[in-house]
Image (cartoon, rainbow, N blue to C red; front, side):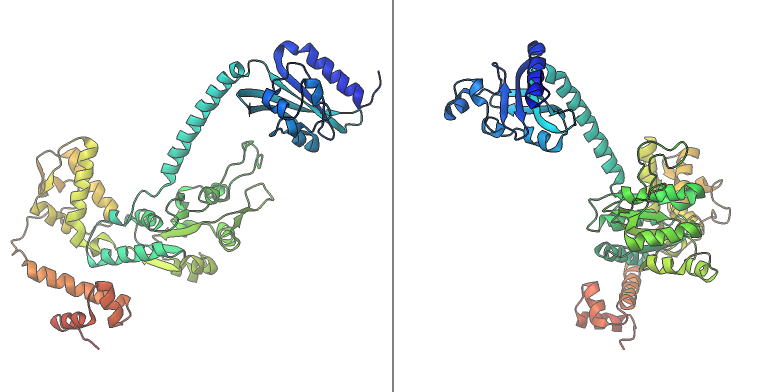
Length: 471
């Protein structure tokens, strides 16, 4: 027997004859993707199509381009690329076929054609595969939904509780930051709600449907920070996984990356973070490949970065990169007007979590809360309310319930006081809002009036009413 293409085609035909019981049809093409052979029970032998081509039997197919008979054939792809397609699901007429396509090569390894065959009883073979595939697809979809939910913003501006002048200013800035694509730096003491505000800014932005990924810099060991941020290439170090592990930048691609306690970041990593922000690309640990990333940075710190810059503990160039849109979050002692609303919110939340009836706070209990300085801020208040539920009983929260929780100085008998008239309280609030609007507008009366929803004439009338200089 010769060694030319004809010999190879003959050997392929003999092979098809040997597995005849397993296949429903087979076809051979040459390097020009023209049919050189097909078996006589060819499953692709469509009577209507054959009739339209003037063909009466599989033998009449020889010499025809394969696409004339099978319009969506992938045999040309196999011949041109030399790559096999060992398993493919194909629809042809009323048939659902499980098809294998393999290149045919000569002694030098050159592609001289290709062979395709359809397994007999394809649906029987396909059913368990399809069922398994559908099961895996369902599981994957569920995992993707759960992951998307975990990366979605948990809070919006509406979750920022309080109507004190300080909180109204924060809410206004959060909305403004949401409309901007610039970096945001959240400043404030521990427990003031910086992560909640970061979520709210993301939810108010055009990235709201993309991931929100947060990382607490202070909580990650220094030797793991680079891998945490930029990811790890396969085999980057002993014990590293064989699959690449994406970092926070890759996970947040298209969305927002929240860097909590940024002041605790080591100087060497600050340089790499700055480069990632400037070049919009990261280099995974153990890799020489640069990965493009598109993230918006919201950073937060309870430390004074400006002081750290002066002492060379924080890079000045990174500080200026982050400090584009600063927002200062007030301490709880600076907005005690919100104490009652916050305490009620936490009481409702804790009661639901413990499956207990909600307990209202008495006026004396609220006075006790107002008498405390709250060094731990809102987080401390939430903890105090939960302790009350766990450690005391009663239908309401009394001042005495804080006896073993708050310092004695805070828990004192309420001093007699006259309730403030509503008009007086409303005037004070209106005056503070006008002053805040004027500060935001840098003294521009027209801008201040618009931000308050007033006409310029009405604003001047209120300035006169509250004794605020109009000049």
